[in-house]
Amino acid sequence: MRLISGVIGPPRLYHVVVWALTFVRAFPSSWTQFAALFIATDVEHWCSKPHLPFLTNWTEEQWKEHAIPTVNRSSLFPAPVFDSCQMFPLVDSHQNGSDVAFDHSRTVPCEAWSYNESSPGSSAVPEWNLVCEHEWQRSMMMSVVFVGSLVGSLLMGHLSDRFGRRTVFFGSMFGVALFGAVGALSPSVHWYNALRFFTCICIAGIQTSSAALLAEILDPRYRTFLNLGYTAGFAIPTLFLPGVAYLLGNWKLLQLVAALSALACAPFMFVIQESPRWLITTHQEEKAERAIRKILTMNRRLIPELTSVVHGLVVEVQESLTVALGPLEIFKHRRIRRNALLLFVVWFCDNFLMFAVILGAVDIKGSQYVNFAVSAAAEIPAALVGLVLVYYCSRRPSQVATLLLAGAAAVAAQFSYGGIPYMSLSMSMAGRFVLIMSASVKWVWTMELFPTAARGFGFAACFTVGRVGGIVAPFISHLVSQSPHASFLTGMWWLQRLEVIHRRTNRQSVKRIKKGGIEPEIYRT
Image 1 (cartoon, helix red, strand yellow):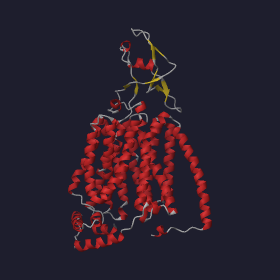
Image 2: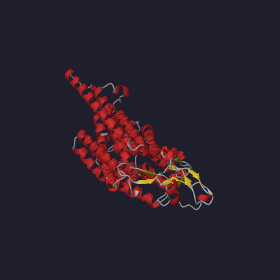
Image 3: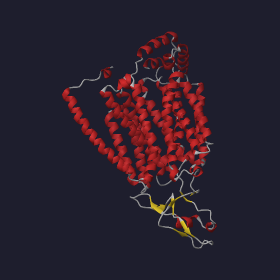
Image 4: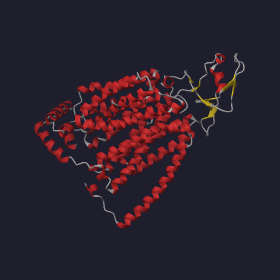
């Protein structure tokens, strides 16, 4: 790729335009991913009154006081609230309603719900009754994002290699607008999730193809700024999302705006050229020559005799192509296998923690709009600090330190949840700050640890494992609501298992050192 970037030259106007495209694409990407937090935001609810004549004159407050039990949401900070899913059964009454009796010795599940309509904004929860035994469907609305992204990364990556980066990008752009806009008309949560799945497949096409469009014209020494643009560029639309949701005040309008924001990329169709590297790799030399000529003209650089230059690029690109190894060949090598397994853990934990912290920001006491925006603001300085880490610090200490700090923030947030809101919000910001830095290191470190022949499969495998972490993360809040101590006990069990694995690995390492090890041949290429 250095050969093509050498012909195009250092970053100028065309590079800025492509970088601007990667920034604008972050709006539909970010808003599609996180809009469900405000589309299916939790609404205070309780068992509704039966439609009985003697209860007609009862106010909601009277009904809750007599028929709804109270529970403590937090064992650390007891604060009784009305139960959302249970009620005392009605056992006796007089027709005038002056003597209504409830059985306070037991509770029964709600058959219908009443909602607090005074909450700001609009939610699909009352419309689809996504509460109590149906609450898991709210988590599914977030998990389907990562399932669609996972499928889309594999599918759109293949289509991008076959039909071109530019074609896939703008095709995916129209797909996001179409599926997302239809999603605003969904009659049920099942239709909404199905359309959201296809929307996220197209979002993955936008993500992968836009990265390739910029990376394949950039000299490797400038490529770190691509990481900065993706990290900070994603954070800014995320920061705006709560304000947009608050101003619109309607979940269907929010879904529509998130979908149509993809059309902001449409004007770039008249400027963006197909990747010259892809054109040369697919033996489209004439189109590659025209694309390079337009890029050089826009950058105001002297145009050489391109026919001979492109012919030379074809020869050199073909010589530089390496035969990619499959998974069976890769995992035969002990060192690659070990590195891959460790990176799988890093990607899973990083993505799992990141999205658990992001999704948990709206559950903090106070305004969900303010809490989410303040928490998201931590990502912008984190992107700048992450750039410094990548340039000047060793990979392994940086990765370990950021993950440990993120874990500490997550534990502190768990203990402060339900107590002091400012403490919970501070821990949420701290967690997002260090996790963004961790992600900056993680992307670069993954590319460096895998040798050239194994890099494509290795990165795709790590990305897949990371998406699995994202799929699981939305269900954490549901798990906590059902069993508050389950997450803590699970974490303690994993700590104990890691200690056992660490001791076993040390013993095996000592044995290998005594026997004498030989570096795999693949690492010498």
